[in-house]
Image (cartoon, rainbow over all chains, first blue to last red; front, side, top):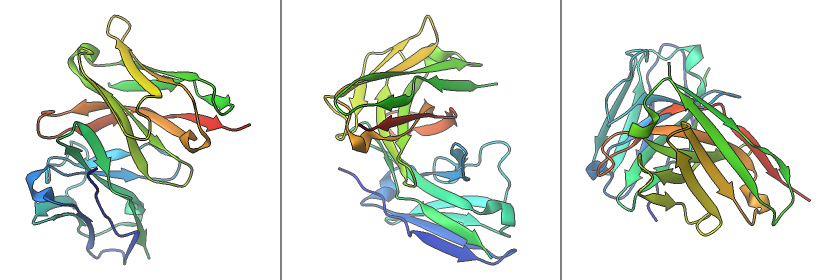
Length: 107
Length: 122
């Protein structure tokens, strides 16, 4: 089955740029999404189709996908961005696949 | 606005069954594929199952195949998950989610419910 790999944790200072990676075989041939989940809340999509932002998501969130790696970038990270982030892709076997999640700490 | 409201969770013994429901509103339910996604306590997200907009196709994660059945009633704007032969490892918050996109290429879980907790324990 298809797998996506994320680092368990990433730390960033306020105002700096945070990058969270997601790797998978031939991921560049798929579309990656990113979800933000804060404690006790449901996930919220912050990037879809590799690099598109839903309405209401701040412009500091951006995404890219090349090689075997998709990347979520948060430019000018704020304390409110501290959360768990999950990448997701749709496999050709008609199955959703999530990465293991990355805990973003803003300190 | 889009709303998804899950119900039916609770405590159940191993080997027993439970049926979850997800009531949808604020969009044309019959036009969208729908999914169940679960999250074990303190763990990550796990996709569980999908049903096509018209119910014509259903796919499952290997971990639940043969035990769980996804279904929908487009006349009631409701999604279901029948869970049989439950195991301790099925303990999780179960979310329903609307799947947006071209299902040949990509699916985005654009909207999520608040989730319903299923605990499998003797």
